[in-house]
Image (tube, rainbow, N blue to C red; front, side):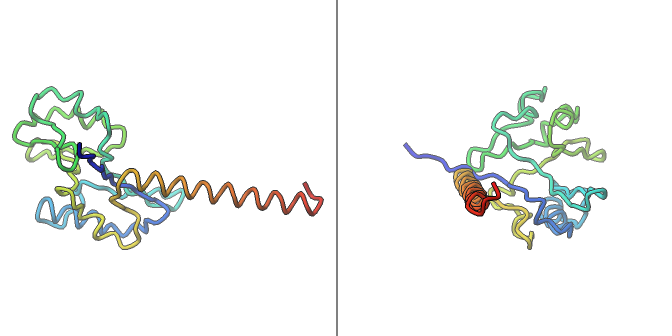
Length: 172
């Protein structure tokens, strides 16, 4: 039995500079125009914090957007990429998917009266290619989990080392 390795888009706001190259790459790849408003990924600027946060579809394991869609053929999961896909020919433009998405990753095109979202560019996301800081990555879920676990282990080891130094110095 073949085990399918799932990949997901990961967004790291600490690395995002707000250049919006991801939005331009996405809109050009998907719509043929450099128009961030047509992008499937958005960079949200939080002025109070002075940070930019890339936001896109996380391809949820149990996608609420698919569950609420009343059109039977409008949404499906791609068997190769595991992306939730909107079939624009079957989309009735009701926007229930847009309203139900917890990440705000679905948009509506009022001219075509359809909803649209990230489809992972058929497994080779353009936004990742054009993210020069590495704020957007397309990684295997297990690799991400392993990397995060290693980072946490280093943090805990660092804290324990610092605590020992304080205890030896009679400060703890």
